[in-house]
Amino acid sequence: MPDTLNAAIRRRYACRDFVAGRALAPEQLDLLLEAGRLAPSAFGLEPWRFIVVTDAARRAAVARACLDQPAARTAAALIVVVALVAALDPASDYVRARLAAEARGQDAAPIHAAYRAFHRADAIAGWAVGQCNFAAAHILLQAAHMGLGSCPVGGFDEPALAAAVDLPPGEVPALVIALGECRHAAPERIRKSPD
Amino acid sequence: MPDTLNAAIRRRYACRDFVAGRALAPEQLDLLLEAGRLAPSAFGLEPWRFIVVTDAARRAAVARACLDQPAARTAAALIVVVALVAALDPASDYVRARLAAEARGQDAAPIHAAYRAFHRADAIAGWAVGQCNFAAAHILLQAAHMGLGSCPVGGFDEPALAAAVDLPPGEVPALVIALGECRHAAPERIRKSPD
View 1 (cartoon, each protein chain N blue to C red):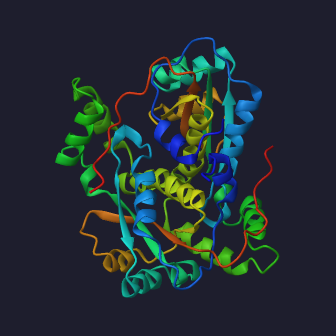
View 2: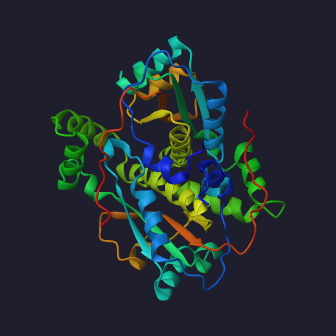
């Protein structure tokens, strides 16, 4: 029975401990990646890619890079959300292709000029990492929607994580999403009051 | 009939032009804010607040700060997602309260130490703005779920926008979400291929 959005929002929480030996099905991973792929991004740049880590040795390497946090250590699968920082250079083929697509057959020069001005003005690596949170939020809700536990892991040794998933120069790990069957029920939710 | 998460993800797109004179109901705005409020954040800091702008004069001021982009100009309501940058100082009462809540009755000192190390290491304003994208993604999906059009507007004159919504020093506008009934059907979706 498919869940509503609101049920997924309410059900999602940071699971710190997953049941061992419950691998995700390939179709589950496909749905998670598809949710991330459809996320919005500024200028339509989609400045991300997703690396799925299911192999035990590689999961262990990623977990070590995540400072051995239990969520990363016990996850059945990890999705590393990677920010494509070097590709965001305004003169790159990547930017040219994305902005041409965004222009939908119209002249891409105005949006390219706006992007060039923005790129000068901002610290692009941190910005790209922040953009990745749109995709991460979609993936986390998709996991909840499917009844999977998840935990966003933002604390990691960046060079170690980059090495564990073989990132080329110019790509920066933005977030690790730990996934699996959660060992515990959701704790009481902590949030600021609506006021 | 409530929508599934996947339907909301597929339905959401950046609407650039809204139908004039279709105000949002207070209950719709409440649901949008609640979706944002339940978003995840690093260290459980929820480093955001949401300012709803429905008054015509104020909408016009926000739209001007958004460089008169049509989505902002025609929206029935705007939600300004604000990053609470100054509050993120590790010694602030805000951080103390959030981390105490996150520790759930256990000693908050270890998480506070980790946060202090993180805060030194990172450009906190840009990071806080990026965290706001978790909340923004929830709000955008909630809008789609309710059949509302939406557009994330990230291009704005920051001081002008801060002035338009009376931000105190130490708060930074992260994103404007334009909302309303979209005048046009969704265009064909543009995305990188899954590969």
